[in-house]
Length: 279
Ligand code: ARG
Image (tube, rainbow, N blue to C red; front, side, top):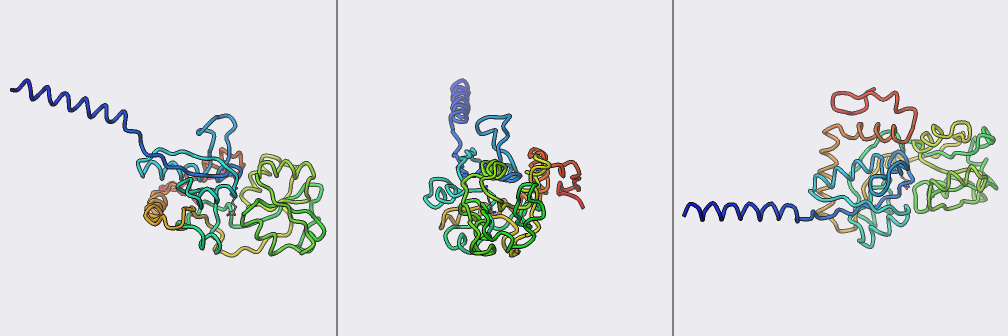
């Protein structure tokens, strides 16, 4: 009898182990546009899933882990991220989204998460040769200014630059930086944090224009975009955002992202006991 019991026990354990090995975790599909350092960008020394880095990638990993799921990052253009969420081909997009009225009407948006100073200011960059040429909105009259498709920066260009300014919509910001350097347009509208990273890596080639967009405080933090009606997952995501914030991970992730992005400011970052940027 004893033998049979232990045999059954051993069998049960084997089955449990086999189950463990075979039980594929559910996959959390997250779309992002990896052209927006320090939020999401490509570490060219790595390949595949490992090559996507930045604050939002750390956040995506955290969410997947907390949900007990396996993360799959789907890199795509910024406008495609939004379509992917709308059609439900991904669970969510974590891609430096600002809250906007239009997005709030069409998607489930998470609570705010605030990842450092990336989007507290929205600026326009231009070649160093044009330094001082664009002190105010009117200076862009008759000029070509680029901004990313379906972005807040594009909206800001449309609403705050003169009517005779030609606004060029670009799909990918990494390419847009090269185009700017190539003289394809006069200037490029970007988040201040991204401008800083770009300039840190390309000193002397590009400068921030004197003109700066007026930005409503509602746009300064970021939100995660989920399909309209995905209320259960949205609630869970909000819980996890609060949990990560309380654990002090935001500061850590942001500093790490800046360092990976090669922004000089990262060298000056110090942490407090909770891992948030001090001072
Ligand atoms: N925060 C801006 C927006 O929501 C720009 C985000 C761009 N993100 C990106 N991964 N390219 O429109």
